[in-house]
Amino acid sequence: MSSNKSGPHPLDPNLAAPGLPVPKPCLSFWQRSTRHSPLLNLNSQQSQDNSVSLPERADVIIIGSGISGALTAYSLLTSPNAPKSVVMLEAREACSGASGRNAGHCRPDAFRGFTAFSKIHGEEQADAILKHEKKVLKLVDEFIKENDVQCDWSLSKTFDVVMGEEFKEYVKTSYERYAGYLKKDVEGVKILGEKDTKEQTRVSSALGGYEWRAASCHPAKLGQALLTMSITKGLQLYTHCPVISVAPSSSDPSSSPSWIVHTPSSQITSPIIIHATNAHAATLIPSLQGKIVPVRAQAHRVIPTPEFCGDRMLTHTYSLRFTLGHFYSLIQRKADGAFILGTSRGIPSISEATKKEIFGAKNDTTYSDEIKDDALARFSEIFGVKPEAMGEGHEYGWTGILGVTPDSVPFIGPIPDSPGQFVIAGFNGHGMARIFGCAPGLANLILGEVKSWEETGMPKCFQITEERLAKMAQAKS
Ligand SMILES: Cc1cc2nc3c(=O)[nH]c(=O)nc-3n(C[C@H](O)[C@H](O)[C@H](O)COP(=O)(O)OP(=O)(O)OC[C@H]3O[C@@H](n4cnc5c(N)ncnc54)[C@H](O)[C@@H]3O)c2cc1C
Image (cartoon, rainbow, N blue to C red; front, side, top):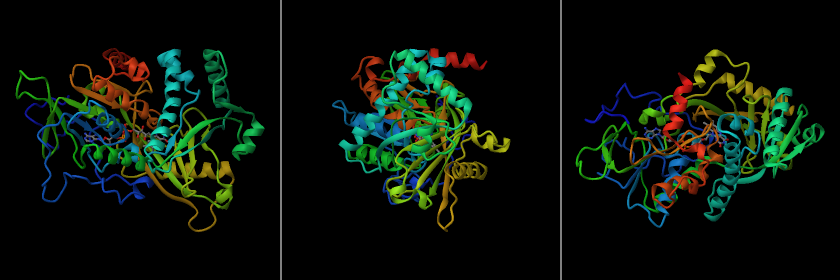
């Protein structure tokens, strides 16, 4: 942990990279359309008279108010063994990290990841990861329906549209390998030939396709709903309250270990700290330095031309894939007909300057015109449409910061050598398809409601262990 036991300076320049989330990020479409939420600046530590101070202690402190932090809070507070006091500290507005600025897709990886995950984690874990994502879609759907969460949730089918010869081969092999492992066809996945794909997807240059179940939603509304539900159960949320260090408390050595959490203007003590800080986790957990890396992602809102309005709207969500790393995600929102066009970091033509803005970056104050122009050109070319009327076409773009791990899966669980500290971070651009299967499991583990990792329902490879950290350190050296 940041180890300045006498308390750090608020603007400590030695804070380990990636540092704190930058102040004044750009607003995503999701944030722009929820400016009325009373949560955004709740208990702001930036209030003019600095009148808000933190309680002295809490049973649990959660750092980060994204979907990971919010669902962990809700899971803790709705448990029969709920802690009495749970405090959440958020550096910026409520839910203003990746959860409030993603591409709105809750889309399990149905089979494609089998090859890549097997290489890193072995076939059994690759299978566990894929099954977990499939389960998560069901969990989110049930949660939203049971709690009547208003977040534009739309369960549909999704197309993986094959746009390149090399990728065609890759994805075919992945399917065959996974089916070979399962010793049967991959349940829920329909393989489409070239002709059917062209017809059904309306993509005339498609080389083939796959179809399965997925969903889309308004992620900021989902995150805000989780926070509101948690607040109803007792969560105390403090926004604009960045945590700058977590240090061991030395006040009473005879009592059980606890931690002092420092913010620029206050401090608070707790025996249990949960880091739900995604791309920024390594700032407060040095052992994750270089193991959760910030990477900037970009998405756009595009207003459809008449070919895609009313009863001509797309029925499915899409991933339009040229290669494994070069793709565009697409959802057409049932709520208003607008497209959300997500981009990837593998655009072949991308300049070195733009690459620098993406990798290791934590600046979500702006977006790249180069990435926007590429995405719009591809979209236009793929669907053969061009905006003609004023108001059609690109409306708005935004960025957010992903927490990327070298082994493509998150770090979850008790942090080695830091008793009482836990992490749930590093979702690799797939948080919507993973967090609902992770946060409740972590809460159960913390409360002792499950006795082993296996009982949490999470794949074993998601666990943060000394061995996993050491293996990554070795691979780097
Ligand atoms: C443009 C974009 C498109 C994406 N598209 C998709 C998609 O379609 N589908 C999908 O599954 N995933 C997608 N993702 C990824 C997904 O959004 C994330 O995996 C998920 O939201 C992670 O949630 P989280 O709660 O772990 O992290 P976050 O939502 O990032 O929350 C972390 C929070 O911690 C706060 N914080 C960090 N450090 C501190 C500190 N020191 N003190 C206090 N607070 C701190 C941050 O401000 C932030 O609010 C996308 C992401 C982006 C950026």
